[in-house]
Length: 410
Ligand SMILES: [Zn+2]
Image 1: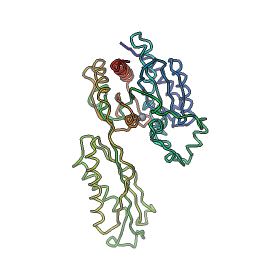
Image 2: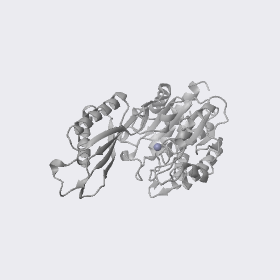
Image 3: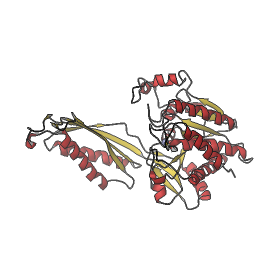
């Protein structure tokens, strides 16, 4: 049976952590110098593990197995948020490397073909899941043209600086993968709260969003009587409050919604605001729940508009992302591996966060393994997981991958 080397795994995770280390966190956004250094380091590690390493034109790093037969692709992303945690996607990237090494060391699994990958820009410096989207044909020139990060840096310049202009890009169509496995920290509290050490993801939640634009009448805050006001702020607060009262009544057990962006202008204490914007995002695995949230939001907008103050207009803030369902066969193999290595200490669960597997599952079967996040904290310097959970998660992934490949008659 394939056995991973926990010390080697933790050692490489710590080497990667040092690249961009800031306090207990990591700053390694896509295409930064540290990100590119980490990608070059990973290519060396892939080569040492017997893989043929290449970096593609958007920065994806792929290590290809020399073994015959259809390969399983395993990995995640090694870029981080502007102020990120040390594990996040790095965990799944080093898992991919370690699974390759462990399989190669065992005579019974040495012939199995696993390719390892680190996708680029999952964290959306330029374009969320850019690397996996490019691989899956979802990053057309129309999306790429004029793309800039929040500081105004053009993607074209970042690619040039990274030495990637003109480098060929990977495409799923050029490969014949059996499927893709991604491991990740949970980034939520459920595993820890339930006393579980492994999560086998059933589906990645879908996501919808709306932008509400409020139009009132800007005026003097001292002389404009309350009765005559068309105050964009009052309408904005009222709508937000109505949403928070109404959504729990139709929510699923793990529905979430967030009004994470609110703007009032001109934004001065002595001016009745004439303009406001409020952005709502909601997530659930069930598309019916997303539909209900959207319908209710429209009804509440009508309520605000009927009050005669500032008026509200609604726009979708983004294209709806459908829930992504993980492959049932892969899940069964991973669940059996979880039961073998952590009997009674694993659970099937949805993923509340989006992942590259949510993109890749449009072109091949995918599955995901989670390990607990201490305190449910992620996208923060405090993000961490227990060493023994990190090692266990990789062992479950390695055993599950071997079972999938053996089951496929590789
Ligand atoms: Zn991630």
